[in-house]
Length: 79
Image (cartoon, rainbow, N blue to C red; front, side, top):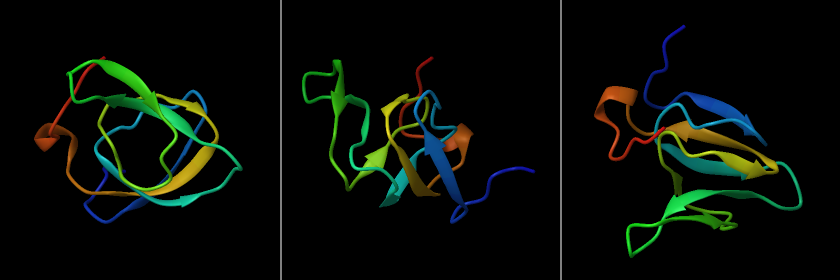
């Protein structure tokens, strides 16, 4: 099945976000995922609210998030 805007998906340690995802619920005590910081560098975040960009890896924990754009229209993409 193809993703649609508004779909809720689960991401766990080792997963990569298939598109931009708005965090809805953290399922573990801790969460960590890749972000692009203000200097345009790849770094890690443990924020429990916000957006996980397409292609970002979940490095710790698990969460539910909702699709906020489709893969081809994602704000950022890296592999």
